[in-house]
Structures are given as structure tokens and as C-alpha cells.
Amino acid sequence: LAVRLENGAWLNAVYAKSVQNALWTPQSATSLAITALVLSVIAVIVARSVARPLRRLAAAAELLGRGETVEPLPETGPDDIRQTAEAFNRMQARLQRFVEDRTRMLAAIGHDLRTPLTSLRLRAEFVADPDVQEKMLKTIDEIQTMTEAALAFAREEATAERTRTVDLTALVESLCDDLADLGQDVTFLDSPRFSYRCRPDALRRSVRNLVENAVRYGERARVRIVKAADSIDIVVADDGPGIPDAHAERAFAPFFRLEHSRNRETGGVGLGLSIARTIARHHGGDITLATRPDGMTATISLPLASLAPQPPASQEPHPALASAARAMQPVRHAPGHLPTESNPS
Image (cartoon, rainbow, N blue to C red):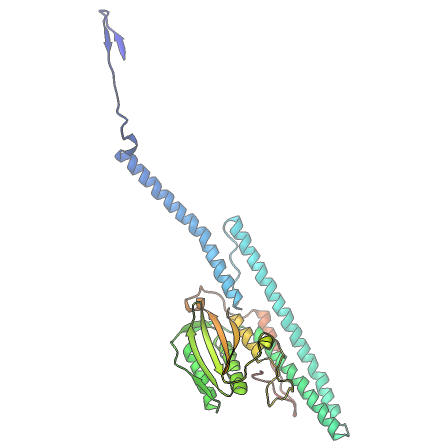
């Protein structure tokens, strides 16, 4: 600042402000910290609002893949998240409609076949030749057995059992004890305890089919539960001849049997392994067969994810599925009819 005085002299003044460390003064540091804190809180809220629907979608997809009924996802949030939830809900509705249509079709086929089978049985009674009559009745019985077994297979898929946490080891051990009490050579080997989230009645049926097959074709069954790297395995070993590798996968096909006589004394109609694998896959697992030099091993592999608590989801059966399951309940048989096969193999 330069000012000329009255006497003609000049008054010069200089003011200087130091700018060293101006950005790191206490006031600026406090302001920066508050700003960073506010931005972090906003970022966490935004991230959670995006991650929560994704976690919900992942959990719902896992439950749907295991055959459980899931409540429709909330169609809210950002556009991409909302569109993904809408697509998932549409996919679930389409899958349910597909299952309902197939279940109703199988129920209708099974119901309609009972009438001509009854008519054929009545007409066979009037056949004069005893040998021809006996052959006709055996053929009719075989057709009726296969029909009832197919209905049982469809009914198993249509029934939506409630998922709950059970002691898996105790479940399998009690099954083995029940079969041993019936005189079958079944042994449950010492296994660690596992609490598992599953549909226990269905899983029990799957294990029972494998154990009874092992006793029927392999003389005896040895059952144990082991924890693998990424699964819980229920292992059923027997001393039978096993299944050739060429037929290992075909053995799970409905109505496929290695023993072709269709004699009820040597086996069922070929649905035991199909039902067992269907149940295992509804739990997110699978069944594998392995032939050993001294027998065969059947393994039910269940996902480890069910060891941890699952997010809440509606486990009530879909109304249409429940009505279809009720429609397929076996009716009272007339004298001479074969009952529904409880455990076809």
C-alpha cells in the first residue's frame, strides 16, 4: 500500500500472510474429517441398499433350486435390481405353472387308466382257458403296478414338505435301526453329528431306497455319514456285483432295470433310484454310484450350505400343487387289485 502524505513524502506499507500448511490447519482437518465421515455413511447406505436385494435374490435362487416355495421378491430398488427381481418372479411363476401342468397331466393319466384296467380285469375273469386267463391277469397286474408307481413318483414331486433343521445322523441311524429290526442286514457305522436343514421325510425315503437296494442286490448294507470338502455325504456300501459303468447313469432312468424279468420277487418296477435322485436333487445335491472290486457304493451328496441358517422363506406348498397332490392320493382298491408300491426299486 503506497500513500502520499501532505508533505509530499510517501508512506509504503506491506502486509504478508504466510500460506505454508494452509490446507492442514486444524480447521481444515476437522472439516475434511467431517466430510469424509458423512460421505462414508452415505456410501455404506447406498452399498447396503444395493447388496441387500442381491443377497435376497441369491438366497431365494438357492431355495428355489432345492425345490422350496419362495415368496415373490420385492420389486423395489434401482432399475437394474428391480428388473432382476421382476425376472426372477416371472421365472418362478413359469416353473410353478410347468410343474402344476405336468402334475395334473400325470394325475389325469393315472386316474383314467384305472377304468380300462378294471374293465380288462373283469373281462379276463370270463376267459375259459386258465393259462390264458393267468397270463392276462399277470399282464394287467404289471400295468397297474407301473401305473401306481408312476403316480407315486409324481406325487413325490408334487408334495411340498416343510423344510426344517434336523439331526441328520440320528435320522439315518434310526432308519438303519428300523430296517435291522425288520430282519435286514443293515449296519450304521459311527459317524459325526450334523444338524442339517432338509425335508426329513423325503430324505429318509431317498436313503431307504438306496439301503433296501443294497440289501436286495448286495446282501447287506453298511451306512455312514462323512463330511467332504464341499458336501455332506451319506454313503451306502454293499457286497453285490455292482452296476456296469455303461449303465451307471441309465440306472437312474424311470422304469429301467438291469434285471429284465419284471418279477416282483427280484425287484420293483425300476423307480427306486429315480425317486432317490429326484429327492437328492431337490435338496441341491445328487447321487453317484461307484463299483468297487468287492461291491458297490451309492453316495448321496448334500450341499454344505444347508448346515448354516437359511434366510426365512415361505415353506407352504403352492395351492395348485397341494390340490394336485390331494387329487393323486391313492383310492381304495377293489378285491384283487395290487396296492400302491411303497418303495419301488
